[in-house]
Image (cartoon, rainbow, N blue to C red; front, side):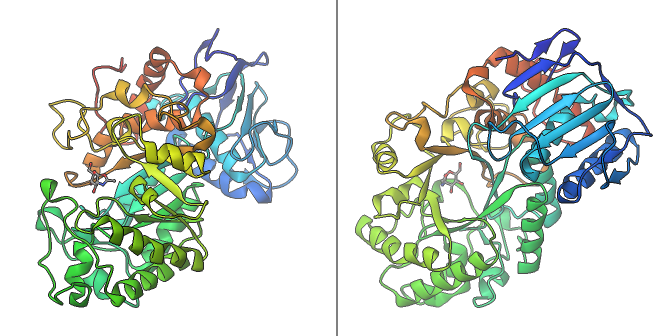
Length: 494
Ligand code: NGO
């Protein structure tokens, strides 16, 4: 494999591409006269590229749909290197042209993210020269996720869109939204309106909370799709449901609604639905029906974690009734790995959030053919503090500085779980302690790009020192984009 270092400089692309070769045919300078050619079926990516180049260079480059000239920037949905399947692309830079080739729009989009990182830093004033290069690239894993908890603290549509734009740069293709929890219910359910209006009316610390109307939620789904990101919505059942219980007294065994919960910490996992109440299943089915209708993606996330008040037998019985509902509404189930105690359809994906590299239930599930998404809390949880000085976050799974987030191999991490069973990786950002987007920035950057690289780049490119150097070069880009990242002392920021 070609290394990333070549004679006219050093490429600082994150995630590391599969192969990079120096192009013999010179560098390409983007000027006010450059055109972008994108055939009609690649037009959305062309428009996106024109937008990002306008913000960085100030040039308003036209997007042309007719026969391409052989100069300028060309996005071609044909003739790519076919090795990598979906999202693979080839990027060739010569003095005459910049050509991105891919089989799909998402492949072109991935190539465009690489192209952005080959340009000088956005705020630097140019010249906007791309080094002569040939890059062949494709992802290692299909699922490269980030999770945002909008339940503990609510984040607005604009704030979630901002997060989507941030993660798209690192070839993340799944955004898991944790929509419900004890402290808040954040999605409008038309047949059970009080879930949002009552259950969504507060948050940790007692603020006003909030929720997404279904139209706003559709807007988020569409915005993510325009960045080739699929949203997986999570409705957390049967535990983490205090907000729902406050909204509908009849969901409680004694028919009395509990007070809203605005705390954090030791109280995690205190609430639960009741498996013996018929209304429990009418409630879950109605919610899943509306959620499925809002979701173009394949999966609904059922939570299923920490249902401590519900005894094990009841928990399994509850899941047995609820799992077929998801299938009935045309979706597949994913959930935190606790759900593996139930009898599951083969298509069920388990998300591992433990802190050890052995888990018998997950290994057995993998052997039965289930796919696993890895979010080990002591590596991938973005809500863990970097060190004792981090102003927000938790430390129950340990401190996670950048090396800890980066130095593990998803393909061999869990004993008895082979790489073939790994659907991918996901970095969860829980929001008990996050008061606003400035805290999202601080906790996600620079660790989210580390997890993104584990999801995308080949095992053979894994190299801490090389990663540190490439990551350091992202710092000025984040500054230019207004991302207030954590200046970890492990990274040689310029
Ligand atoms: C746990 C818990 C969440 C917390 C998070 C905090 C899972 C899957 N359930 O992770 O409710 O917010 O830790 O780190």
